[in-house]
Amino acid sequence: METVDRVEAAAYRVPTEVPEADGTLAWDATTLVVATVAAGGVSGTGWTYAPAAAAGVVRDVLAEVVTGTPATDVPAAAAAMARQVRNAGRPGVAGYALSAVDVALWDLKAKLLGVPLARLFGAALDRVPLYGSGGFTTYDDDRTAAQLTRWVHEQGIGRVKIKIGESDGARPERDLHRVALARKVIGEDAELYVDANGGYGAKQAVRQAERMREHDVRWFEEPVSSDDLPGLRLVRERVRPDVAAGEYGWDAGYFARMCAAGAVDCLQIDATRCGGYTGWFAGAAVAAGHYLQVSAHCAPNLHLPAAAATPHLRHIEWFHDHQRIESELFDGAADPAGGSAPPRDDVPGHGLTLRAAAAEPYRVA
Image (cartoon, rainbow, N blue to C red; front, side):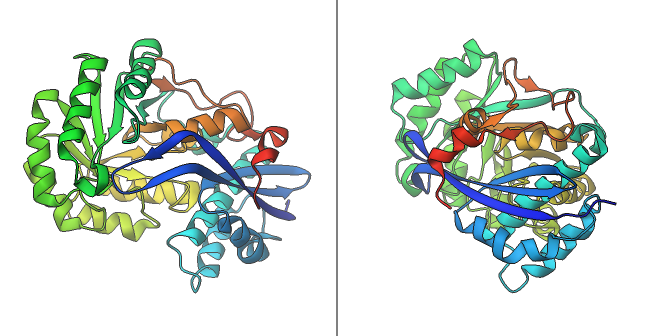
């Protein structure tokens, strides 16, 4: 039985094309943290989008409990990592680091067994539905229109999402203008989603949803802070769009509390934050127990194998920043044309390989 003999990590800071923002945060670069685990001359790759400090957590905190473990016993390694970060704090940077290593371990296991990761998990879907996601609040009308046009009219993606809740909800009229613009650009047939990133108060979100009614918004993501479960439930009970949240979840308990509160119509899960693929399936099981669908948050190519193995999946978020980075820095990135994508079925593992030469100029740790 092969045992893990190497655990490494590196961080890469990739500038955005233009400054970006949502309802509550602004940024001009995205940091990718890549974890590598190896056994018997074979290596697995995982990643997360997190501060560069997460690479240090992999090297300085997690490597010692993963090294020497049987490479195919991923649940045991996942449990050891969860214990190891107890005093460091599971939510946040430590959890992101743990998630990247977990993904790398599953990739390694599939490679050692010589099977595609989607087959190791067991496929429920041949192709995974997706939606185009971007529409940042810093975009002017021309850039917003161009992005939406590419997704809907050039790539045939029938679901798209823009950011609203600008300036912590202080610019509701501009939010409404941008929603109207989006509907005009995509036409009547495409589904329109919005994401306030917690920028509104609960009653404000209800009022905004009523004003957006004429534009047939189907998905209202984080209308209020995802920590405000009563507020999410209030909005959910009073608006027509489906309310979604969960992207900051770090373990099954978080998802259980959100689902039990009746806070969402669809649970978002992010494998790069909640414990990798191990955490994804735990969260998906919680959602299934509450008769809820799940949607993968960001990191589109990483999510494909697990999403394809999830019967109650609604879709994957094809997030602009992450798809751009994954297409530039990895071989094997999927094509979203037509509004769905298959997991890799032609190579062992998840099928994504870091292009070292392409990534090196962005390396920061």
